[in-house]
Length: 214
Image (cartoon, rainbow, N blue to C red; front, side, top):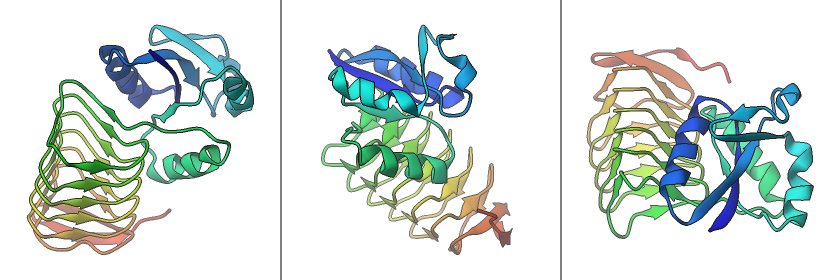
């Protein structure tokens, strides 16, 4: 078993931890909480909060070179990945054994596919993508770095999603639609036309409401 530590100690970290425990190839050593340093030593999800980012050097010295970044904020997740990767850590792709990922699907470092999710042939996921519980990425979709496809959301065929975009829970994106970089698609939205970068869109059909405050 390969040792791994999760960066993050909230709800999504619990989900990723469960996946790692279902996979025979990983040994979860604990969690890093970058937000609240007072949680050091606290029991969490069957393991322990090891500390904040200050422990990363000690982990490398112990031979722990693999991390999983497990929190939903897309911008923060991408920033943490870039900063920590520079120290020499690797970020494995993690696929829950109860997910279905077609042969030949390309996934970037640190991407996570949760239980019940489906990723179909010809799809491509960038780095640090979350395909959350029960979400569907249909054939030939292109999903950029740091995208979060929330639970039960569905991308139909040939959809393109830009870097850092958020597809809300239960949203449905029509085939061949483009969702721009850092756009935010609301819960349950029905997206039948392109969403421009850095725009909030929601409704059935979805309409562009306002610019996203990043």
